[in-house]
Length: 326
Image (cartoon, rainbow, N blue to C red; front, top):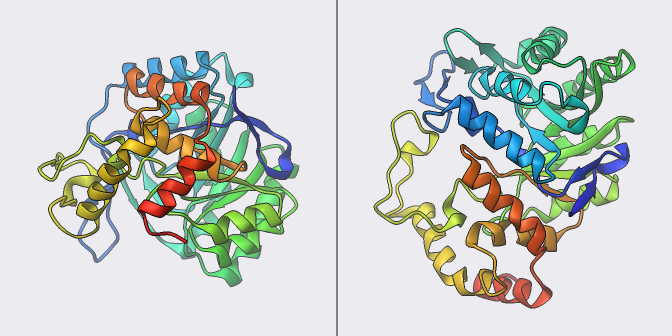
């Protein structure tokens, strides 16, 4: 079983986590004064979600990443129900920083409320998760003003002292923001996008320099790296991918990259999805990808990647060559 030490916390987590965005079901991002848009991944079966979490745990996965946003609290509630009675067997990471309406299933950004809402946001997540502590509590507003970040860290350190949380991090793709939190005593991880199509060497270097774990969102690039999409693929109106057009632009280019990489990625017995995870493990030993899931089958396929292990150096070199990387 592949394991990772989650930065300076010493938490030993499975090298593969489970991302719980998709199991939150439909919800809406509705910024005041702007048009709303779907921010979930379509309809879900809560019973299947719980079965999938149980299967993940039985297969050795002990790290689950969620957020108050996902399903406007629904993801946290389902995860909490699934781990009831087994809380000591898992590590939970969740996120805060947006205004969440659990009843209307609406979420929006208001940076002016982050500091004043932090304690209540934490209590709300604890309630939904059915636990009295959070292992890693992450700021979810990626571009939050850097001059205000130390004040957020101060409250997070207080929450650590009070036992509400154990460690904290920032979900951001911006190294300048992550670098502020990285110096915090109980900061242990940064969450950022990383996959075969998209590397972030600056963020990976920051994790190494500050002894942090890297939690990798979008390791399958919205499902593109599973190879199951074509230029004719479409999604329901309540799916965040509804606006993707695989006939042109970046999505079309990503499909072409997948086909160009297919032979290399599957040459050692991995499926495309498994190889996408194995690529991340081969790239950097600090990284923990968190693929999303909606059903048992997806969890089983992803978990099997841990048995197959990382890609080898030759595969990494071939991937770089095909994608034109130096």
